[in-house]
Length: 245
Image 1 (cartoon, helix red, strand yellow):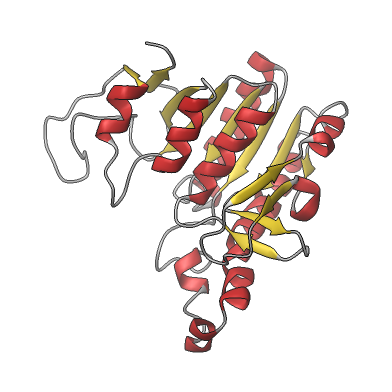
Image 2 (cartoon, rainbow, N blue to C red):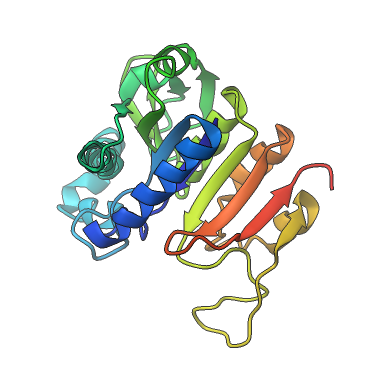
């Protein structure tokens, strides 16, 4: 099986999500099963992006628990939308969220730490479904309350599930061809780096806007996962980050 994570740009519109559907279908054909993790739809300024939801009212600044509940809604909506569109596309799937997802966190709302992973429910569901869709960026506390994992937390969800499910590959879908020699949005003549070791990859991660969350990349290295960073809008190979290279 394989883990696939689709970011906000991939989820941004009906047209962009069609590309997600084709990548998921291809993954099922090639790997048999896939667990799909999604970020909230779009980026700052888009109606359902996390930053937009958190600015509904300034009162949310006063209550971290309520703020996390609102923040988590972005990924929950994205997961529900993609699950429904997958079924419409002809791919039967299961939407899994909340305590059933098995990610238990501290009560440090807004930047919770994962304290336990239990994938028994997912493994059981994978017997009946080739595709499971889950919201990224969140877990539940021991009291059953939603807590978010900090900025870039959906990347961490993908790495965590990759480490605890029978998968050695995690695909991250972006709006760039892969890991580049510079930022293609602001620089010219940048080139794709086709393969990297973890040592090389971690040195390239920008602390402000890393292509993969640094915490997620470090966890993936610890568990010897292969990362595949690809452009959601094409079938090009992208960048492979290999363990032990």
